[in-house]
Length: 409
Image 1 (cartoon, helix red, strand yellow):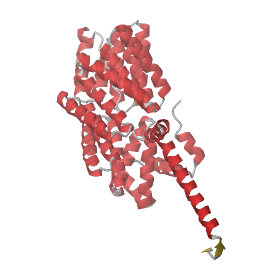
Image 2 (cartoon, helix red, strand yellow):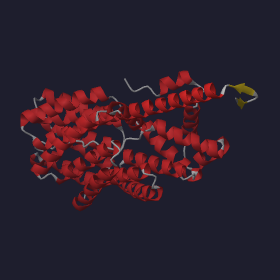
Image 3 (cartoon, rainbow, N blue to C red):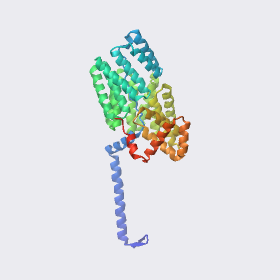
Image 4 (tube, rainbow, N blue to C red):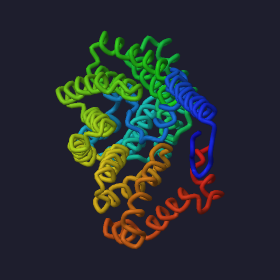
């Protein structure tokens, strides 16, 4: 006989029942493990996580100059000064000069100037303004039958829709741009659009299809001798391997991309690569290395006025600091990043930042969190909005939460 919890059981029956129960538990565990390791299930679980991460992979926007270098002085001179302002990362000055050139521009010149203005607005993080410029450039290209100008306008509209989280719209415009560039024999633009489409498939969760597009873009950029494109494509390939969990291969590609981007002076590429390497180290739990690369990325993003990069790098640094339990330092960075993304209507990132702020509130208390946000220079309405977001994330106002996180229509 066996005595358990004050009750008496027949020994044979007891041990037989116990053995049966143990076998059932072991079988259930094995089934769960095997199910979890199925490629489709593993990919779906990984993609659900990937969609919650802040955007790290930068789409290349296509500049289009048409014949502006040969235009009349009243157009050419402000255009050239505008290009110089872009190279110096003086985006607002560049926009003013392009508008000055537009006063005397005609036909396809207007298409090119509007596209350049949109590129500046995009880099500033003013996504809706950028989209308006690109859409106007497309209308002008159609009006003046500027077939060459249609592709960059279509492609850049797709870039903005991608950042706004509208993946189907983004894919529609990108595929039209790719087809147009292919028909025109513009292989340089083709490589850009192939890479952009790869990023969209990445965000849609099809990593194998994303890798296929990125590798096609890489081969084309390499054959054309487009070093900027090669650096960007290496980084995109790295991002796919990162989300596949192949961190060693991802780091190898990112380091190659960073080395090339530094060599050719591709500063936006340097920011993207540094940020990506920081993320890889963060996923590996190497927080000190992650922080080092993240801070370097942030410093350069601020220097060149790349606001979406500033937001991404602030957010990543903030999340690293939360992991290191340094919420006093993390909260202002998370709040600043969230403020930039909300102002630009960026679809990716806010949820993870709000979760980081909520963890800071758990550790510090709401009063201290509010104080830190005020000390960081945020306006009262921004503070109130972010605290409200934390409340919504805690399901205090579920009906409002659904409205807030809906993607733009």
